[in-house]
Length: 501
Ligand code: NAP
Ligand code: MG
Image (cartoon, rainbow, N blue to C red; front, side):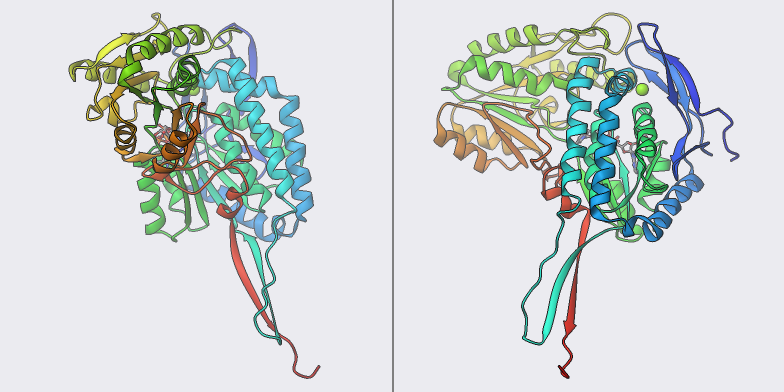
């Protein structure tokens, strides 16, 4: 296929009519270049209208990006001093701070999330993530190990080379930050495929990387469909590792691609069906507020969403009332660019229909809608926050990841039963418990098989604390010091002292 001719810069309009200029070409070797794949339309989910078309990468573009990254890694980047890597990452964070509103605007436009949430959570936390890992860049050391008196032995924590990354659409900038920040701090070059549903924020990010002064080839951002661009990248022999966030089904395909190519290292952050356990002694107001945020933040489109709430039977009815009230207080649905909007539209038509389909399935299974259950408005992919009661853990709405603003509330009699229900899931990403009793909190947090547990809160993140799944929620840790080992490999060097001395 010949390269597409669409110019890189396009002027597009926000739903409030304001114009904004966006990059639409692939970012390879510090240049915006046309792609050889088809042009892909990106849609504004608040209006269902096309924002613009972006270029996509075919196999030859993926080859070009991987080659640029390998050349840079071998000739330049691996020789750059760690402190200089840290300085560049901090400079990038400064530029993101300067252009925070524009980055948040692109996240809101392309994804449909509220602008204020994009600015105060997604972009703010992404900047914090870059600053955190910038600090690590010159603090990554091996060890010296004593073996015998005439031998010196030490380890080096070396970069992997070229990291391939594939991210989903739910937190476009933040998912990129979680991978770029540790990968660059540890000295790798990166080729990232954005979700083709939300490419625009990542091209702005790429332009900032160039402005920050990263050598050409360190940062490469491409767009394209998963089954083509994503598959080419994950099967590429020039890629040393795939860092992936997305569904469990795609995670399996990436594992197969690694197995069938060069056995590249993998880090898989996959789906979830997390349980929030509300005990009889919980502070009900606190539990209702945090658990509502735990499911309805980001329109329910979070891998760690607390989509199953398990409530002790003695407080069930009271909790349901308080939960619905907390939901009404918290979830203001509207245009992503209205200051007080909390919930925007779902990401696209396919997800919108899938979620409404699950709401129908739930009713057919015998569950009862206690709140919401319908489309909101008649334009844009908006869905009311929806609460199901009369649910058991065998229903499809309890077992399958809906990835929308839909929560099921399940009764339990004893704490052991609650733990069994929470663990009766293929997933193991996160969970929560609401209780005033320290023993109960300790028992539940130690017995639930998930990578994160929250007590009397939910969905609390920090760049310094690790995040990742158990079971079919994947493996490997993002964020925190733990992320450093995902992007490095350990070499041991053994030196024999000369016997002549
Ligand atoms: P997805 O369908 O798995 O897609 C994720 C990314 O993988 C997209 O860029 C997709 O491209 C690409 N992809 C699809 N098939 C591929 C293949 N064969 N090879 C390589 N790449 C491929 O997931 P999604 O619907 O975008 O995101 C939602 C899912 O992500 C949920 O299951 C959610 O739980 C999970 N998630 C997990 C975390 C976590 O940290 N654990 C965080 C956020 C989201 P296309 O867009 O073209 O399909
Ligand atoms: Mg879009």
